Amino acid sequence: MYDPKSPQAEEFISHAEILATLDYAEQNKHHAELIDSILAKARLKQGLSHREAAVLLDCDIEEKNQEIYQLAEQLKKDIYGNRIVMFAPLYLSNYCVNGCVYCPYHMKNTHIARKKLTQEDIRREVTALQDMGHKRLAIEAGEHPTMNPIEYILESIETIYSVKHKNGSIRRVNVNIAATSVENYKKLKDAGIGTYILFQETYHKESYEKLHPTGPKHNYAYHTEAMDRAMQGGIDDVGLGVLFGLEMYRYEFAALLMHAEHLEAVFGVGPHTISVPRIRPADDIDASSFDNGIDDDTFAKLVACIRIAVPYTGMIVSTRESQKCRERVLKLGISQISGGSRTSVGGYVEPEPEEEKSEQFEVSDTRTLDQVVLWLMKLGYIPSFCTACYREGRTGDRFMSLSKTGQIQNCCHPNALMTLKEYIEDYAAEETKRTGEKLIAAEINNVPHDKVRAIALKNLQAIEQGQRDFRF
Ligand code: SF4
Ligand code: SF4
Image (tube, rainbow, N blue to C red):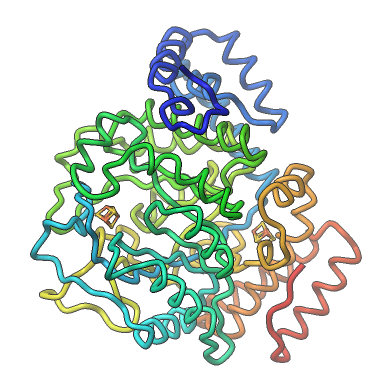
């Protein structure tokens, strides 16, 4: 039985409710009046239920679809302005005991190089990431009880935070590791992590079990209930995601929103972020063998509908997507992107030789961070290296209430400009620097609050004189 408050995966992600939702959406996809009323509700910025959002996703009235895209763009502008937060993944280890059939790190893959970073390796990788200009990382590791135990992850987080190279520092470490116990989530919380990220891959239980034939990840309930345990462990910023291409996207979309509704119903706060990865080719993996792939148009519609359904949840797109595709979805709702990423273990210090390749997937957007920063600015965005919220204790429901009242804008905008200024001073190439200076000079006038603007201006000058790490 469907129950968003239930602690059991199969009740809050009820298969019957998803099928009923898909039917409802199918029956109403031409229903202009209903679609208008859903759009009117969405304009209030309070979000939509999974059923309402599913109708928008299915809508095939051209004129209404244009309204959906326009609304997504508007909400994006109203809530996130023109800022885009930057991050990079850091792969710690690709040892894994699971059998995920879409991932080259699956245990039976004998031809991929297996690597695990030592603490010294991590210091060197982090130094390289700092020299690029990154301040925010997402660490990734396979699941392996002896190679990657929680102690290794905790020690690695401590090492990452401890590296201070020139003016560099990693100020926020988000963590993407396998589902674990409440006790371990508490330890991650105590280690000072930002968001705990775990992709569901697919919410369709039968497919999930086939795609994860062996290893602890085979347990659908344990995996699906992980965010509940993370919240019980005190982590109140969690990041959801599915791997689009494994199952039917309409099914995943409805289930993803049900998962968000469940977290809101039980813990009073929905997901901090949603990621929208699409399956990519990799060693031992032929992405075309998964027949639920989605084209760029469908992908854009998915992003727009997620933006409308959960307006205050950040949305992340990685370098899995091409420059062209990223440009399109940035407009429709993406608030955070990676840049200059390496998806291999130890790929930042030096490129891997062909025979030692350990990457998880092929990157589509291979530009450097500086190229991505310049590109964003030329498109009218402000690349932001801000990590202020969790460092100021603005997490979970505290963050959401500031976000919903719009007060967070008083922090995001000046923080974006101050962290971009740091980037420009320390890492930018000539053209990026010139473009950035102009952008900051123009955008400082858009800080709404007089007092905040005056402090931000003072801080920008102090950054020019060598001081670092200001934040609101
Ligand atoms: Fe291991 Fe994660 Fe890859 Fe599965 S997706 S094989 S758990 S690294
Ligand atoms: Fe994100 Fe908070 Fe910084 Fe805004 S102020 S960009 S919400 S960390």
